[in-house]
Image 1 (cartoon, rainbow, N blue to C red):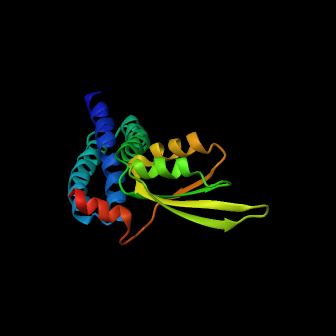
Image 2 (cartoon, rainbow, N blue to C red):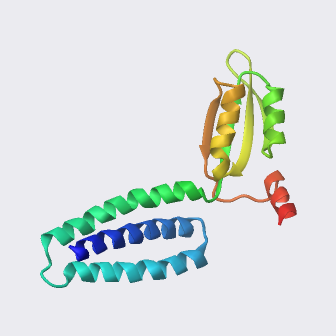
Image 3 (cartoon, one colour):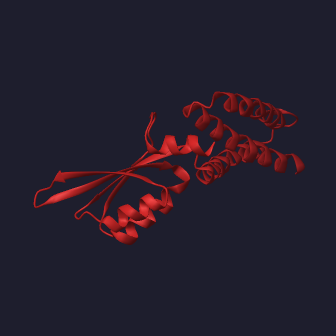
Amino acid sequence: MKEIILILLLQLAYVPLLTLRTIFLVKNVTVLASIIGIFEMLIYVFGLSLVFSGDQSFLAMIVYAVGFGLGIVLGTKIEQKLAIGYINVTVNTQVKNKDLIDTLRNNGFGVTLYVGEGRDSNRYRMEILTKRNREGELIATVEKFEPKAFIISYEPRRFKGGFLLDRMKKHN
């Protein structure tokens, strides 16, 4: 029974590391991904050796697979908490809400405003680049001032210059 619990615990360590390593690779943080990969492989080999040693019980294989599935959930939760990287948020409104723009800027968000031609009137589009861990705060602020705003967020792969990078350089 101890081996079964150990197999589960190893999978709950291995798969979140796998998830984080993959995310770091995608975000081009290769040194950290490499270090995580070393620990990931040690856990993987040890866990797999437990499954295939001895009587190779069906229960050990099932627990290994279930642990993998649970590890994916755990890894995803960890990544969401870490919120590594940046997002670009596009906010479309029907009115130029100066209070919203000022509040966002006063809270450290860089806002670029564009005016567009809608079917019935002008529309206002705000482009905001921020760290992923501030996405909830940003959206809550927008919804407070503009409950009917159309909001899109996505992860930029690469960016250069601008308000956010200048501000980060000053704080380092």
